[in-house]
Image (tube, rainbow, N blue to C red; front, side, top):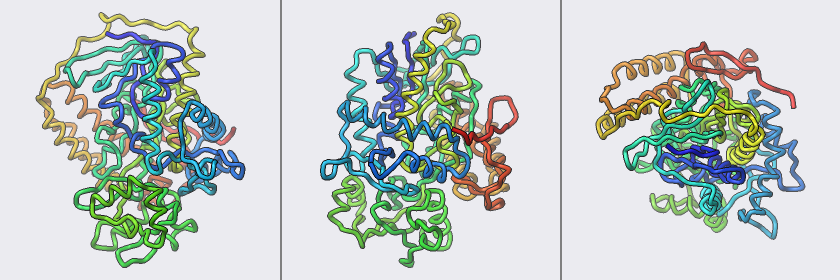
Length: 526
């Protein structure tokens, strides 16, 4: 049993940054399910959106975020993001983080939904790797932080309704480890690997959502899954993301006939918001035999492309694709827009349990995340979560003794095969029934299939794999139930039986264990 001042679960940018901030105030346990570099943040190619240029303004960034969010953004949360973001970026640079420069100033990129160049990059197309490596170095240097790898968080421990720690399973040593502390921050990422085609690591199946749901947290806006429009499609590779920044540099989308199709769909063409681009590609694919369209760069300067996107260029070359000509692409599940509902300081509805990063539903993203806002959210709300913990230092806490925690559960190799098979079936269900285009019948059939999976899931006696299987189904059901509830089309949620936006649904859809689905008004004041 370990005791710390701060227990932080997740090694993406939100977890790393909040650990680093928290280390100033106490002893920190940073817990991660696999290796410290296995996260969505680490593989992020795009960049960080923040106002750093004199020709830009936070008001413009605010407006672009609101427009992309399709009426579901909470204005107070967005205001905090765009106004506090530049300060967090400044602090990172002062700490030694190096972003790409051009002629002595920050090199700023343009991505879909942005009307100004405000995307900071590092290493061209490996911003996520650069910034997480930078934070990993900072974390590893700090004596107040202990990193625990290969520990799966399996339960939030509560005492008198307050969070007081985390139960974990050591995957390497096959034993339980308990962490107790004054403050717990979950930064466990999203759930997009619950789909068949995804840009996410295989571990990103919504563990944090299921944990928080079981602990009675409020879960919001789970119907909004963002499908990235452009991941490489070949027989060997269907999940490697092609950054939106490639379209920002002028790449065109072509159907199999070689025709541009986005120009007739949106005034911003290839730089339309992601949901529109992804849905447009999906529809083009439905019209043709091939399961992909082309991202064409043949009209662009090849030297500029190779220099700007060295890793994407290398990946394409390894697959026999000439990036400077055209790349076969198709949409893939990319980002969980909803998540665990928090206030403006990262507090969940369970006292002493904070949420940040993709796992959190702060109200910033609305119905559709604006490109490159996610890494900024990790910094801004990771910072605020730690500050809120400090503000609460004087309040009394219930402590929990080892004898109060139920006995460890059993785990061995049995059940792994059944879980892997279940995971495959759930991904097929989600892709077929809750994908880019949905309708009542598809969603209802998908929910019924999940109910059958829940009923038929083999109980091997291996409690870890049983829990993982149940969690997988919980997350899938939360997505489908919320999608059934929202009888309209908005952002990352498209219902072909309700293809228009409806004023009736300008609210957040909230789910909580053993309660009816409810709604929460959108905050449109600052």
